[in-house]
Amino acid sequence: MAGIYIHIPFCKKLCFYCDFYHVISANDNSAFIGALLKEASLRKEYLENETISTIYIGGGTPSVVSITDLGTILNHINKLFRVAEDCEITIEINPDDIQAEFLEGLKNLNINRISIGIQSWEDSDLKMLNRRHNSEQAAIALKETLNAGFENVTIDLIYGIPGMSLKEWESNLDFSFSFDIKHLSAYHLTFEPGTVFGKMLKKGTISEIDENDSAAQFNILIEKAESAGFIQYEISNFGKPGYFSIHNSNYWKQVNYLGLGPSAHSFNGYSRQWNIRDLKGYIKSVNAGKSFFEREELNEKTLFNEYIMTSLRTMWGIDLEYVERIFEKEGYDYVVNLAGKFKKYGLMKPEKNSLVLTNQGKLISDNIISEFMMTGD
Ligand SMILES: C[S@@+](CC[C@H](N)C(=O)[O-])C[C@H]1O[C@@H](n2cnc3c(N)ncnc32)[C@H](O)[C@@H]1O
Ligand code: SF4
Image 1 (cartoon, helix red, strand yellow):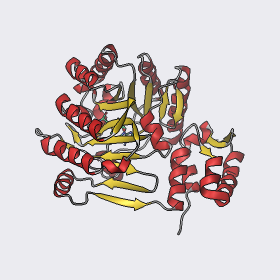
Image 2: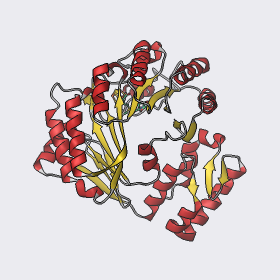
Image 3: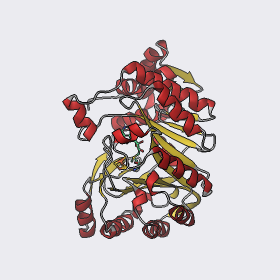
Image 4: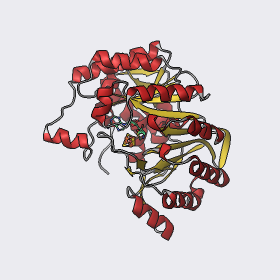
């Protein structure tokens, strides 16, 4: 089983926190769509003989692309690859792009999972983040999506926004869970260099929220999601049973995937590739048959680091049997010894033949993961 990720690099407005590759929407997407189709044809061998269990159309803002163009992309993928009948097909949509006709079009294309970028139900947050929508629009959009018969709907929320109180975050969660969503991705705001927020942080005109407030918001997220019937299968991802995202899970379980479009990443077990973050350059190079990606061959150390980085964030944790099989006794001993320290402080715990983070550990997951990273040649 393998996955395909399609990156649509257009946004109508730039959100102040976002570092995903995007440019302001063009009126004419045809050059991009043409290059994307060509890239898919050029790279079909990447997933040769594999069955595609998930297609994820992300961005940027996929909902700025017309149903006709989305149909052309999906038809092309279906012709080139062996797509499973029950393939999870997700599209990210922004609340202010949701209209009955668009939803109907998505259904006709067999898109069966909708991811809506709500971010916050508080208008003051949405303004601060420079989102296009307000909370009323978001509620209408979510209702319309559910009423249109999409049963696998996920939303994105951001917490740790400057000025966000615990009470506000709680009510954001309560309001979210009042809808029949099956999945939630909740991310702590990060200040990425180069974004508006990143620059403001550097200048000192904005500041990160207090660590204790961050921890309180994270803890309430876990508590409320659990009471609402969601399982935290990854630090930022919560799904009702049977609704964990195949796309996300594949990524954390080292399943092969092909990324199409500027900035998209691909992985085939031995190497990682990432397409250039430059729309014009991407179109030009694809059309001229020139290279449009960089590639890193993974050695044992980088494979080990990748495995720890992805697995430790999930509820399945580090599989010790896998570590021993792939990284032999040396890798196994390294993991078990290091984990001993974290277990002592209640940050990690054993589970069957795995090692997982405790809730306390999840709070400082980045620090724990970085201690596991193997460095040097
Ligand atoms: C590719 S983006 C969004 C897709 C869609 N264009 C939208 O805006 O809803 C995926 C998600 O990443 C999250 N995200 C992006 N940058 C972030 C940041 N700096 N901090 C926290 N969450 C972030 C947001 O929740 C966003 O919905
Ligand atoms: S959050 Fe979404 S809409 Fe906003 S800039 Fe990023 S990709 Fe575009």
